Amino acid sequence: MFGPLGMPEIIMIFVVGLLLFGPRKMPELGRSIGRALGEFRRASNEFKRTVEDEVAAEEIRAVQKDLQEVRSAGAEAVKSTVDAAADPPAAQSEGS
Picture (cartoon, rainbow, N blue to C red):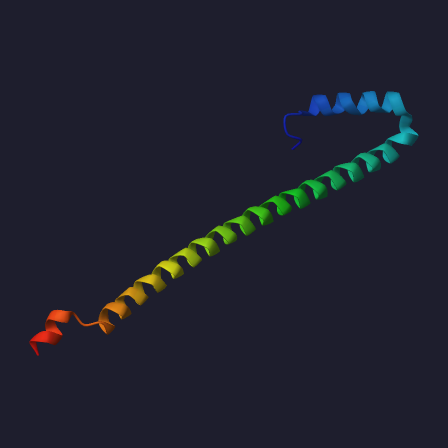
C-alpha cells in the first residue's frame, strides 16, 4: 500500500506528527504535502516526456541521415548504369 512502510510505521509517523503539529494543523499539513507530491509528480512526468521526445527526435534525425546516404548511393549507381548503357563498347561498334 505505502511501499516499504508497514502499518506500525505509518501509525508512528501519524502520532509524532500529531504531537509536533497538533490536531488543528494536521489537515492543513496533509493538504500541503499532497500538493507538493502532486507538483513533484507532474514535474517529473514532464521531464520524462521531454527526454523521451528528444531521444525520439534524435532517432528520427539519424534515420533521415541514413536515408539521404542511401538515396545518394542509389543515385550514383543509377547514373553509372545509365552512363554504361549509353556508351556502347568500342569493340561492338567496330564489328558491325
